[in-house]
Length: 200
Image (cartoon, rainbow, N blue to C red; front, side, top):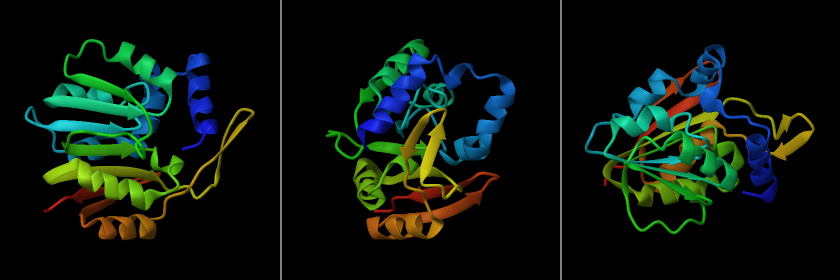
C-alpha cells in the first residue's frame, strides 16, 4: 500500500471521523458490506484466534473480539491503530498491530482471518491471499467482503486515492492458486462476500 493511503486514513482521524461512533442509519448502511451474514460466516466461538486485516478504528472488532479467545487486528495507519486501541481498551484479548499485511512478519497462525473493504487498497491480491493461506491453521476460515464498485479512484473531499477494484473472477483465481477453497459466495447490495476454507 502506498503512502497516500496512510495519509488518507491518518487524515480521517485528524478530522474526527470514527465509524465506531457513526449514527445508527450509517451503521445500517455499512452493514450492506459486512453485517450479520458476514459475521455469521466467521463461525466464531471462545476457542478461536482471529485476525482482522484493516481493523480501522475497531468498527467490526467491537463485534468480534467479545466472541473469540484472541483477537488481532492489523492496520497500515498508525493514527487509526491508536484510535482502535482507545475504542477496544475494555477487552483484554485484543492485540493491535501497526503495519502492512503484505510485509508484516507474523510468527503465529490464526483460526479465522477476515477483511472487509480493505482489499481495494491491495494491488498484489494473489500474494496477500497466499499469505493468508499460510497464516491460517488447518481447517481455518477466511471471510472476505469486497466492494462491487469497479472505480479505480476513491474520492473523499479533495483527496483522491488510487484503488485496485476486486472482481469475482480475480478473487476466485487467487483463492484457487492459494490451495484454499470457496465454500460460499454471498452477494449483498454493495458487496461480494467470499467464505473460504483452508482444508489442508
